[in-house]
Length: 465
Ligand SMILES: *Cc1c(COP(=O)(O)O)cnc(C)c1O
Image 1 (tube, rainbow, N blue to C red):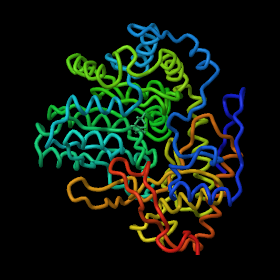
Image 2: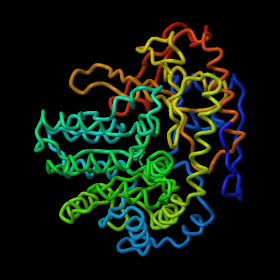
Image 3: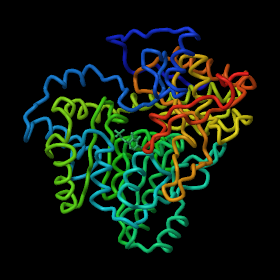
C-alpha cells in the first residue's frame, strides 16, 4: 500500500453523515434522473463529486472570517487578499471575482473576438464555454499521452509545442487572442505541466506576440507534483515552484474554491496595467466593485489565510498522498484508472471498465450511477456527457477519455472513507457484467449539460440485468 502520512491536523468540529440503504439510493437516483449531479447531498455518504468549494477550512481561516471588513469600497480585507495573491503568485494586478468563471468571463470578454482561435492544454468546461460564447474556436494542443489513460508520462499536462506551432502557422498569430493553459489539467485527471514545458510554451507564444494566461486553480498541487517528478526541482519549496510556474505567464484566472482551501471566491491576476483597467471595468458590471468582486470581506480574509496554508509542505504532501492512496488501492485491485495519479482526483477509465456499454450509451455516466447505488459514493462523469456537442455540427463530441472522476475534497475525509470508496468501486468493477446497458438523455440542456441533464436506462427500468 502506498504511504498514507498522518494528517497534519486534528478534527475540531464534525458534520454528521447520513447512511442510506440500497433501496433509499435507488429511489434517490431515479428521482435524480440517473444523474448523480442532481442528487441531494444528504442522500450521498462520501461526496467525491468535486474538490471545488468543498474544502474544510482551518481554525485560523474561521477566525479570519471575523476580521472581515465589509465596507463596500476599499475594504481592508481586499488589501490583505491582494497582498497574499501578489506574494504567492507574483502578479501585480489582482481583481477579485465571485469564483473562477467570473474571471474567465471577464478575461474572455476583454480579449476574444468572433472568429479567433484558442489553443489550450485540453479544455475545462467553463473555460471553453466562455471562449466559445465570445466566438472563438478551441484547439487542444496537449501532448498525446494526456489522452491515453495507461501512459505513465509524468507530465501529461504538457503542451505539444509542435501542435501549438501548427495552430499558429495555420491561423496566424493575430487571430490567437492568447494561449490558455491550466496547471494541473483537470479533464486529464489532475495531470501536471512541467515548469520547463510551461516556460518553453510561453517563449514560443511570446515570440509571436501572443500572451499566455494560466488557470491556477490547482497550481499548488501542480507545484507539488513538479517537486516530486521534474528533474532539478526536488530541493525547491512548493512556494518557489508556484512562483516559477506563474513567472513566465501574463496573468492567471483562479478559482479559490480549489487550492486556496476556501468555500467560495477567486481572482483574475494580470501584469498589463491597461488590460487590468479594462478588466476592472467589466468586473464592476459582472462581479462587483474591484475591491470585492462578488465576495464578502470575510471570504477574502479566509482566502488570504488559505493561500498561505496551501503551500505548506505538510499540507500539500498529505493532500496528494491521500489521492495517491485511493489510486493505488484501485490499481492493485485491477480497476482501470488514469495513470499516474493526479493531484486532486482519481479517474476510473469507464470505457475500459465497462467495455460492453457502447460509447453512445455513456459508460462514464453509467459507472457513476452504479458506484452510487453500490456505496453511496458520488463521483462525476468526465467523458462524452461533459464534452457536450460541437457548436458547429451539433454532433456529440466523443473524447478519447471516458472517465468517472472521484475528486477528493481537501482535509474532509479520512482513510476509512477512502477505503469505503475503494471497496465500493472494486465491487462494481468485479460485478461489471451485471451492468447490462447504458443511459440515454430524457432532458438535455444546452449549456454545460452534465450538470442538469436527465437520463433513463436504454433498456428496461434499470442498468442491471
Ligand atoms: C473550478 C475550475 C474553474 C472554474 O472555477 P469556478 O470557481 O468553479 O467558477 C476553472 N478552471 C478549472 C481548472 C477549475 O477546476
